[in-house]
Image 1: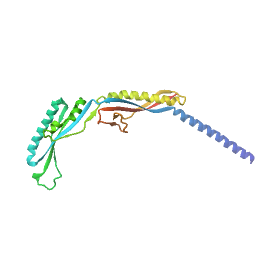
Image 2 (image 1 turned 180 degrees about the horizontal axis):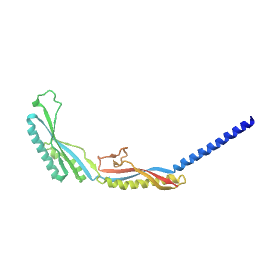
Image 3 (image 1 turned 90 degrees about the horizontal axis):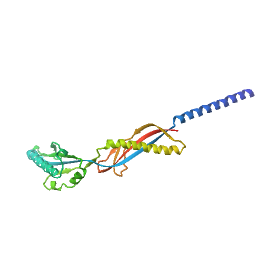
Image 4 (image 1 turned 90 degrees about the vertical axis):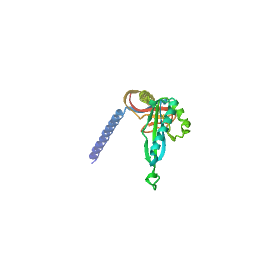
Length: 240
């Protein structure tokens, strides 16, 4: 009986030793396979918008019997706006005039067909590289209003036309930033950064200067002339 127990104990002990060695081997392989450090890098650049879009419209309300005169009035209003723009240095090639849009006013439910009214609206869009001039002009439309023109003005939209080129340069800077971060982390563990294993770029963020309101899907703020372009990258380096 004693010999049987001794044999069982030997087998059990051997099994534990083998299991431990197998466990250590698996752990080592996993650590070896994970000898890669992944970090995020970013880069930002301040730019000034070089393109502006300005949308405005003129409108008139007319009944069925006065539609013809309503269209004539819209045409005169549009000419007033065109002259205002031309007198202030806006080129004809920078102006797009859409066809007149007519919409029935449905707030008048219980009136005869003859008494129903319609809103006639014509949109005028300005797309210019002279950002400063258009911004100043948008603040000085009083001379048009004073001529009896019913004009609605939308907010200006500011864009940066060299975004694609800037993105390429910023991606390179973001990778450098990621490598610097990786080096600091590796040094703290007594290792060094090796070769680049993989890299993926995040979305581009075009923000108002100083803003931190980023989006997972990317953002493009058009409300301000001064902007910050920011890109991020996810980079993996080998360690040695």
